[in-house]
Amino acid sequence: NNPKAWNPLTEKQRIEIVKQAETKGPSTQKFFKQNHTQYLQWPPKSPDLSPIEQIWAYIKKKLAGKHFRTKEELFNAIENEWRSIPNEKLHNYYSSFMARCFLCRQYNGENLNGKWHEVKEIHNQYRTQL
Image 1 (spheres, rainbow, N blue to C red):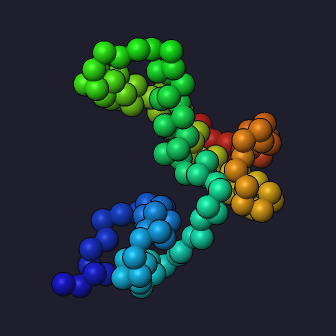
Image 2: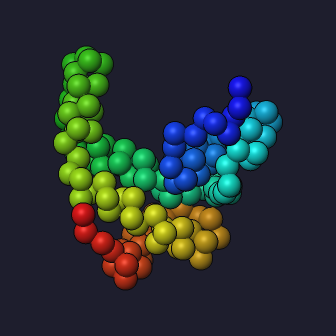
């Protein structure tokens, strides 16, 4: 069992996993620190740095005001919204990561609520299209 041989993920995916593992036990933290080249300290008040949080916010907004009779209906609605997210939107969430990191650092790790116009201004400086 060579842990370095198990590496089907991209560097960016590994950084996200390491970030998530930060709250896990010492042996998990040790494994990730030993097997990944970068370790990203994640500010505890900034879940909006993660693209997945942006995606969940998008889905919640799309489903706001809708009522579901069963858990299954809710799950199906979430799955349908998930599958219909435009690729351009996903690309935007991913590509705006650096702008969000820059502002998070500028605001000492605080969340970015009320600062999305600043994220957009910075992101527009390097934004790319699919």
